[in-house]
Length: 244
Length: 244
DNA sequence: CTTTCCAATCTTGTATGCAAGACTTGTTGC
DNA sequence: GCAACAAGTCTTGCATACAAGATTGGAAAG
Image (tube, rainbow over all chains, first blue to last red):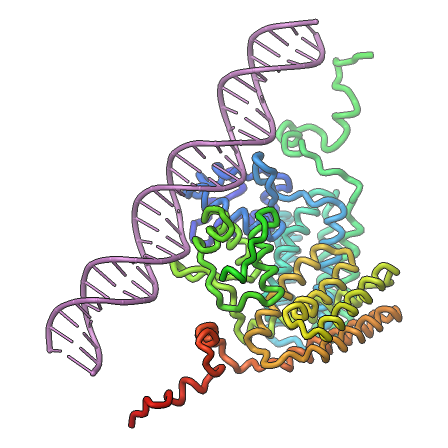
């Protein structure tokens, strides 16, 4: 737990520390965030933690289980589809509404794609997760509409949680290529094409999910014990423990 | 103040009571919502009011001025344009993503438009304000995507606040016709056309705003004293108070 | 050995208390 | 008469205290 919420200084806010931890996949869906725990980590009282949690709940990032605690959301398959649908609607709508790409905008996109390439080469998966989500936020920022930026940031956070539950393997290269194609279309000034590519890209990612998979409440424990992932342990008995 | 926040029973939540008051324009932008005041109105302690305010702040509906109080937001001209831009993006994107209108959906739209007609005939402006915003929410609901519904509901609340600041007169009939056209296109199954009409409709409404108008902090006091609206009072002296 | 029940513990839900900043208003000095 | 100032009042910010539900662990009964 101590690693998941770095001793970010108080000024940035508890909210952003948690969101940032999610955006870089340092914190898993279903993680319990006890008020007292977080409070002591940040050196404040429960009051402020609670306020932060209220805000995060409004943003669809944590949920409270009455008198049990706060948990990072574990989107259901249905919710996952809604998140992707919402992103398709908003991102495609956004691109279609754009009319020109400034020189600064072009540079921003190039710089971002270069970073993605770098992270892929380095195999830095945590950084990559963060960057893959950020790409879409960068595009929203180009529009200058901070309302949409904030909406998409929260949806991106949820997307990352979704991928942590339902995504078996991370096709980083595929996503990167998708991003490159979108950026290229934008540079050509063909925003309609960029919008269509964006929808395709999101479809691709969504199709890559295994939405039949149930979130595994024992995931972290399983991992701590170095047990095989998912189901093998449950269906087959351990050796030497044979029983008719 | 007592009239603005009806003694809605506790179960529905303080948040929704306030949002509902805004959606039907029973509460004006810039209204102060003191923690103690609201707390006593709802018969709870400041703690719960504060939590509600935190959530509403996250939704862009209230803002806190440090150690001064909570206020219903008064969107600036810039923010107003962003809200409309965001709505264009999302609503158009949503319509474009739709593929069919169910029979139930058709009925919902018809029923809503009938209500609009009724309110226009009755001249019930408060109800009309509510309905005009609701139309767009109904459409989102047809998509079944609750995420987008919630986003649009908050944007609609902000839109109403914007119109209370910058809109001089309420072209209810014009808006209603816009809604009818959109619904008609949807019934024809021509969602692309519906999307375009939606953008036009929002443009129309936005164009009808006078974004140069500054929010008047004395509006409610002025109204209480039955003084002429806006500026006349400030530039001309009261009769009998002539002074060289 | 298994099941049931109860007490201890831990968690959030809510209220309250105190501190500190912002505004108001009356007062003082000019 | 007017400006500067200062005390008082009102507000949120934050911490803490206590109540109540949820969970867990163990003891007791079958």
